[in-house]
Amino acid sequence: MRIAISSVAALAAVLSAASAFQPSVLRVPITTVRSSSSAPILHYPPSTVKKSKLAAPLRMADDEAAESTPSTSGTGTATMPNEIFNLVKSIVGAGVLSLPAGIAAFGNAPSAVIPAVALICIIGGFSAYGFSLIGRVCSYTGGQSYRGAWSESVGDETSWIPAVTCTFKTCFAVLSYSMILGDTIRALLMTFGIQTTRTLALLGVTGTTLLPLCLLKNLSSLAPFSLAGIAGMFYTTVAMALRYLGGSYKMGTAGTKAAAAVPAGKYIADVATNYQPQFGNLGASAALSPNTFILICMLSTAYMAHFNAPKFFIELKDNTIKRYNTVVGTSFGISIFLFALIGALGFLTFGSASSGLILNNYAATDGLMSLSRFAVTFSIIFSFPLVFVGARDGWLDLLKVPMEKRTDSVLTKTTLAILSGITLIATQLKELAFIMSFAGATLGNALIYVYPAVMFRAAVKKMGDKASKGLKREVPFAMFSALLGVGMGAIGTKMAFGLL
Image (tube, rainbow, N blue to C red; front, side, top):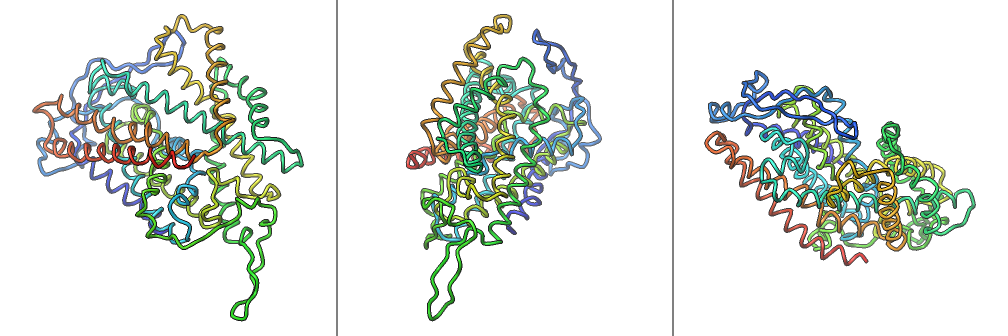
């Protein structure tokens, strides 16, 4: 895990270097207004330029140019530790549990972990760069949302493009949640000796729990439960490490003249044959296979938190670009470490048999992992409505339903229609790895790599002569990341369908 640990420092250094491209800070006061739904909305008044002392340490070759181009700073109240915690919580979700299957897509020998961890670090670095670009575009343009940043930089007439992408990406997130719930609840019921099918388990939790929660008018009371998500992931990481190091899932081997017999792990007899560990000779060199793009595209889904980048920038106290990049670098560094650790532990335990949801590989009689299933289930159930409402509101926005017409009746009917459709699809699709890789290859790559670079290029172009030489030099690198995203997406989409 040396590569993963060093990535925290390396990533912070990269983003710190990126901040050297930045101009000094323009402070724009933000006022809070109320919409018809009584939700607070941040509003930027006209901008005025003011040099910030905090920008002084961010020196570059052309210092005068660096100090001549404005950026935006607001009056947010969130501290850096709070932002880091919340961003890690947003990134490290249940999607990380599919990463062992991503490694198994191209390798079946333990050494396949080496290039896999390297890819986790590299893709994490590019994802962090895209997250940074979005916040910086908001700084330059005053955009207050992903769509707003696009409108202010590229143009309002095409702002529907990121809006549609965000809506569909949120729907895929809801779909993956439903699929995970079907698997984990069925496994939990089996722990108590209750036999049921995955479909019945999913329909049961949807009808009795998810639907009532999604119909709540005020979801603020559910926010504290989302804290269980990051706690559940930390617990799952520790539990997986204990099971791997303890050899609880090792396959037994018969003794020979040259070697003594190796007893089977404690729980191996309780694991279905297709989920028992399987290893071969496809190691590190197998990373040259096109199947590697399945893992790469899974990572584009796993690292996805980019539609919230404007929120993190605006709410950060004293939100200079240097402070914002520190939040981004630290948060993604921690996430990279957890992704690498969980991906490696799951794959090293089960090899090519790693399920799209790695918890499926562990025996229902394993109390330690059953507690992990419970933690993940609890987290998803109370996070589900928060994500679902984003998908529902996204569809209503795309259909141009005005706020005054979003009555309780309309919201209820929309909720029933969307939830029914997603649940039906979830009962038919069982391969979570396909959803993760396909959504990452198409929507994730666009939101993480392509759109941020396009917005950044447009924002710098609009600055004209006020743009520093550093910003102009950075544009080609940003566009390279966009082309990288397009290439990975095209190949990854093709490879994803091979999982079906």
